[in-house]
Length: 489
Ligand code: V55
Ligand code: FE
Image (cartoon, rainbow, N blue to C red):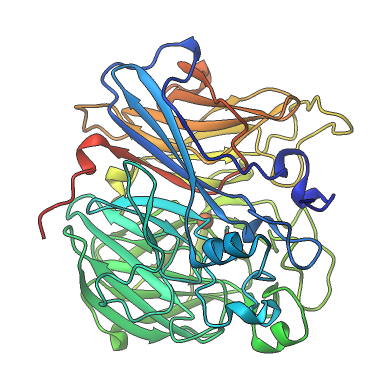
């Protein structure tokens, strides 16, 4: 079995394919806080088979889920592929059957009608269910204790009629609800969206169906105490693109961006749409409202950040325009103006924003994100400074003072998205740890770092050796041991 000899399949992107249970990971520096009792779940695209088309994008690999468990000072690791319909059909065939990213026209005829999920984008525990997510499909339900797949196409007991479910659902810590949406909800490339409220027992409680201004990648969203916020950014797609063999998405700089604000508990006719000139924003750090004023914080770039989803008019990829800085989008539901006001919050360049998740939907003081610091040296064959998505620094933003604190991981490493771990027993914002995977690029190995979330510049308080390279991942979340028990229905 030969994977292609392309950048998508070599170096740090070499497929891993390792499923494992490792009971004790070596702590190589510092100590694991004894009171930590819970698991960091994360997922990486990790193709099971060489692609049908000769090459493939990172976004299309099969979801490999990792559980890093902390208990009584010990760290263990489990890793399993999500048993999606795609994974199971391909394992039985011994080869790839599904083709290009989000293009069923490129699939082998034997899999027509099967769910195309790779479950490779995020993994989150809610109401005792571990959900592995890809935004083009329903969730994959896995057992949090074993990472066994329980249902490859989980539809909330038949209540979810959308064809899709976002990879970025949000949990409102005050209510225990999970807020989510689906786009292309009535079929590939449709403008149909649905917003779902899933109660603390894991049941769909409320849904709102509506249309977005144009079909595009609706990757993330925000919520506040009183509103839900949807950003429409021109990463567009169409059946014409799929029929002509283009990548599903392309960036159309001729289109404006929009922000749709839905009152929580409201109906489709209550949504108000605002707009601004074209730009690029994907992940959402957080949102909050002060009365009718809604604030929405995103790493924002002036142009396309995804070279593999090229400009629709053929403009070359521009790394300068792809640099994203944390920016606040503000609108007022009571104002006459439909404009979005934009205020830059930081001049650090980076992505993968996180918060202390207990403050989701509320005004947060702190944010953490990965940063690409091009002033730092890179000591890798043929590379002098950080480029592409190489994030060599982690930062804490203080939105109250404007101050930042950073930790640079060194000249031969990069970082994956962190997750915030509250210090057991604490309630104060930011009091806790960040867990982050370090890519040791020279030796193709991985480490797990724990940092004091309020003292990043001191460096890791705990460094743990991973038993094998953890392939570059997307997203993950911390789940305290207390969250494992399913709430009574
Ligand atoms: C993203 C990642 C995806 C995807 C859509 O912005 C968007 C990240 C890993 O897959 O399908
Ligand atoms: Fe994402």
